[in-house]
Image 1 (tube, rainbow, N blue to C red):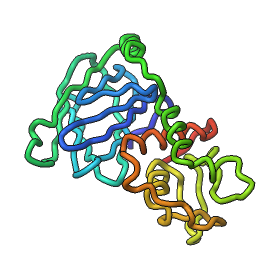
Image 2 (cartoon, rainbow, N blue to C red):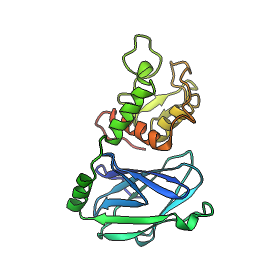
Image 3 (cartoon, helix red, strand yellow):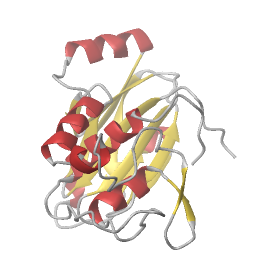
Image 4 (cartoon, helix red, strand yellow):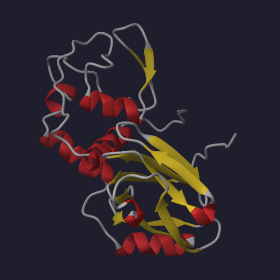
Amino acid sequence: MAVRPRTRSEISVVARQWMWKFQHPGGQREINELHVPAGRPVRLGMISQDVIHSLFFPALRIKHDVLPGRYTQLWFSADQPGTYHLLCAEFCGTSHSEMRGRIVVLEPAAYQAWLERKPSDLSLAQAGARLFRSFGCSGCHVGSDVVRAPPLEGLFGSPVPLASGEVIVADEGYIRDSILLPRKHVAAGYRPVMPTFEGRISEDQLVQLVAYIKSLATEREYRR
């Protein structure tokens, strides 16, 4: 079984007919092109906006399904710098054959230089913090005299007791479900009063909100 490294590059992937969208932690965005550092572990957190897709790097012999409504993750390390094909390996509609791009593997110093050449106004977490405020989430989750919702500091990666008596780990999927399907996993001790944001928020915005809530977690090792 592969050991998940403690230090890695984390990149978010949103698939849609017929496009691959990638977001780096610093806020850099790419469409149908993915830059990664050579010889360093990379974690892709992936979700589809519509139907099932499959991210395929033929030269690296790596293929992983990307599903609607559910996060999947892929860990890999590309050792040889170069430019390689990036394809969808699951028939996803009439323009399936056009859902392609490239993965660009750079030496670490060149990758860092590429990140610096593509500055973003906000990191993923900062963009998520702005959305958190604009959607009014802070009214219940931050500094309220009336306790309506659980605090989010240190939440990610922690066990969450539920009103049902179950205990669930607060991973990316739990956070996404809590935003779109708030009655699915109601935290113990709280009333199910949170409204759903389904239909009001895009997958790209969900990625940013999840990144923000992850940034509130304490510095510690967690398992998923």
